[in-house]
Structures are given as C-alpha cells and as structure tokens.
Length: 265
Image (cartoon, rainbow, N blue to C red; front, side):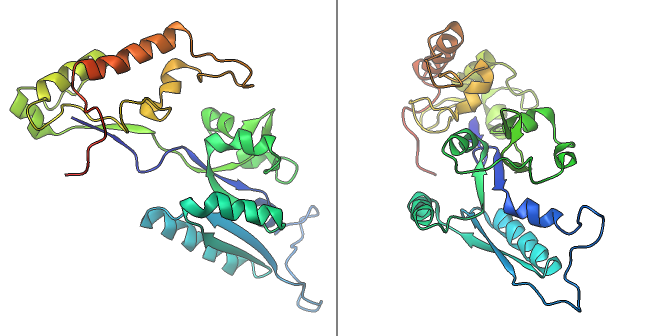
C-alpha cells in the first residue's frame, strides 16, 4: 500500500492587494468606466510585479495564460509575472524588501499568512475590494485567509493534503479485497502487515520516522496545533497528541513502514 502526498503542500493562496484593486478599478463609484478617454492624455502604464515559484507544467501554464489575459484586457496595467526558484526565494525577497522593490503580489501557502501579517509583509484586502468578492467562499476556506476579521489573501484553489493510493493487484495477491480499502487506522496497519513481504513494505508515509506537520495533516486530526495560536505555550502535552504519537510509533513497531524514505524504484 502506498500513501502518497499530493504534488503540493499546502492549501495555496495568492497574497494580493494591487491586483484586486486594479481588477475592480474598471468601474468607478459612479458606475462610469475608468478606461482612458481617447481624447484625453494617456496615463503611464502601471506595472505590477507578481512572483511565483515554478511548479508543475499545468499550474505554470495556468498562471501564464491568465496573467496574459488580464494584461490584454487591461491596457493600462501590466502584471509582470516572474518565476522565482524556491531555493532562491527568501534571498531574492529579502533583497527586494531592502531596496523597496518587493513584489506587490506573490503566490504562497495558507500557513504563511499569519507570520507575514505579523511582520507587516501583507495588507488586509477589505479596505480595497467589495465584500461580495468573498461571499461565495466556503466557511472553512474563508477562515484560512482571515485574521482578526480581515482578509489577507484570496484563494486560488484548494485540494486534499493527503490521499491514500493502493495497488489492487497487491491486495488480490495478499488475499485482501481490492474493492474494500482500509477505513480505520487499525485496518490500515493490519493491511500493511499482510501486504508486507521481503523487498516490500506494506505502507509508505511521507518522509521518515520523524513526524512532521504534513503527515496526514495531523493538526486536523488532533484539532489544534502543538503550540497555541498566540505562540505563548505548548499544547502538545495532551491525550490527543499522545494517541497520535503512539499510533506513529506503532507503524514502525509493526514494521509496516520503512525507517527512512526509500529511493524511487
């Protein structure tokens, strides 16, 4: 059985302020178009830097396509899309912040929003866009982009953090029902034991024996993070986390997962 992470972490969001302001600036408060009048002097084009880390071809093509579409439909604005490698992101961002050229829009995950807000790196969008922009968001997604009742980003898409993949042929080989995958943690471990054989582990988990916050999105299983929301105290020493760590230890005690991440076959 192979438990695989999705190709992305995190639920992702665009930390935007200028883009939304510009998108909505097509109409003024009196309902008249703000597009330049042919008989009036043309204003200089507004350039908006937009940074994103290169990802899979589909996501990269999606951002490129819609950035180009926006630029075509808004002749007075140019969103300048730049793909910044992940390993160079922090260094490039700090350099840009120091000389005042930091991007007005960047692509990020939801987990970075609170820290970015506390460090003054992002501004609330509510003073710049109409409330109805957020009305069709699901409640749980709305909560991810809000702090203190204000929105600090707008979601691009959401997806499950973890999916369970399994080989039906391995199930059949081991005498398991391929149409009835495990539905509980106990069933998962028991299936892993049956599927294990020399040269094959019955279960694979992200990373290694060191448990991380991405493993099965465990903070959602527990209901809270191992530290309080204000970072003032540890909340890891409770029964919920003891059960989680006991379960994680059991995976290795039962020898259904490798002790360290395996190289691709």
